[in-house]
Image 1 (cartoon, one colour):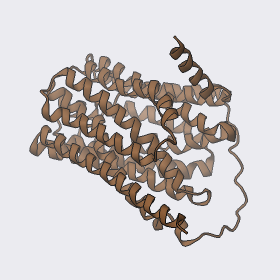
Image 2 (cartoon, helix red, strand yellow):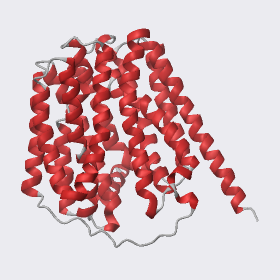
Image 3 (cartoon, helix red, strand yellow):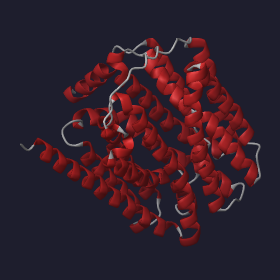
Image 4 (tube, one colour):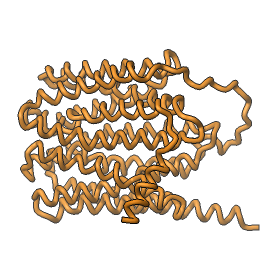
Length: 411
């Protein structure tokens, strides 16, 4: 009972004092993410219902990742031109219409073009949303406002795939309609309950003396971190593209069961991540926790290699890989922020975002190619070995940084 009260108090302390606008913004995101149904089932839809090859499905998902890069750049540029509020609204509303349009596409070229445009429009929301969080929150609780936003994303992710799996068992067309209308509903809710406010005024330009090492390109440790982080993301992102296909074709799960299994990811993150990070943060170097996460991700894929394809293995996989994600992503964010300074944080953030966008392209394409030519199990083994090597890479970076710090501290 005392433990329960302590947990409740921990969450109360974490989220007390946030502005009403921040809560509304998170609710908008929750509704939008709760309707996320099409993308988790895209590879299954393309291969099982439109009879595309696995390689073609991988290329469609690569179009989605490419559009994400374009959308991130577009959203940042438009936010500076017309304001983050307008970008958020039109991104959500237009994305809803594009989901409805995508449901009517049947040929491979049509779907590739539509997915690319849809991803470009939809991902324009992300930079605008980051600016909005900063605008609606006070400096002293900005970090907690971002945390609330992430909580909304993961709660929505726990609902969307589960509901999408149920709807897909009746008709895949329902996914496109529900996903589209939830996007538009989120946009309308934002327009009604979240009146626009001006973004924080940009500070006057000042001349900042920068040393050569301040340029992100000269931070070799960070560049190695991006390389290993991209490889790690390529492996991790399999669970949202190739893994659902494996669950359908090899484990023979129904769509509702696949969605329910995938929703475990969002539920666990929403329930555990904040408390876990709060208790671990600062006790060990960030990259040590990241390396532990890679071991867990490796173990999850090893399960698919050595155990028979049954539903229990699928559930255990999702449990282990989710904890691996919770060890990796929050502490990777902490690492890159700690490497940056106020005047060059944008450079660091841009490269970090692009590395994940590249992973979004490479992950489904490579996975689909290998699975089509070699099968699932060889790909799971390749993925497991690769992610484990990234763990050694992160530890190598940490060791090199520690040695450098000791040399600098020595008299």
